[in-house]
Image 1 (cartoon, rainbow, N blue to C red):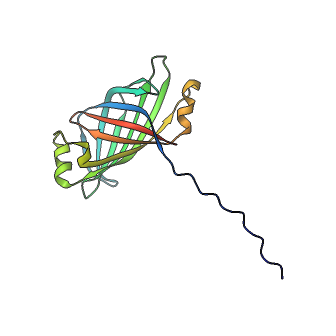
Image 2: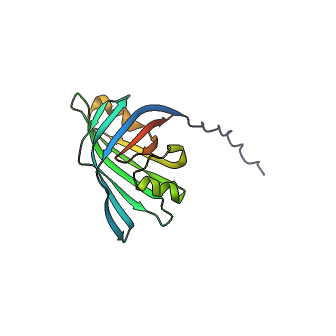
Image 3: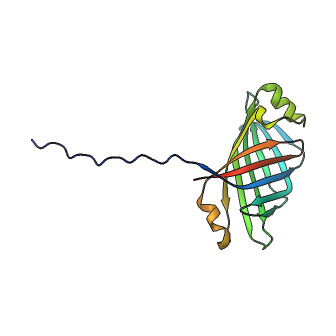
Length: 163
């Protein structure tokens, strides 16, 4: 009987790191509360504008929105989708999917528009980018994690590339 062939040694997978890429500031309209739907407690928050600065600089265009589902525990499933335009006229489509959660009193304060230190709650999203601009195509080839803060009329987040 022949012994089984030795398996080649498996190399260790790299541990991902994070590299800051850009910051985003999104101006928000009033919450449109759709109430309980088949998907859950649905809210839609219109995106009025904003800016992206860092590796790419762009103006966030009005017309996007954050389609949210409020969970029974008060946590919010985030699904933000919006467009941005660079000074050269190149368009970007961004989607931020994630969660905002925290203690009930903290989430209630955020809902009232009160200022809450972002370390008091969890607000993280995965950001994906689409573009037809050759000069920005490199942005489509990475995954991004964002750490966010909600204020009364805006969301601000720092975006990091997994490396």
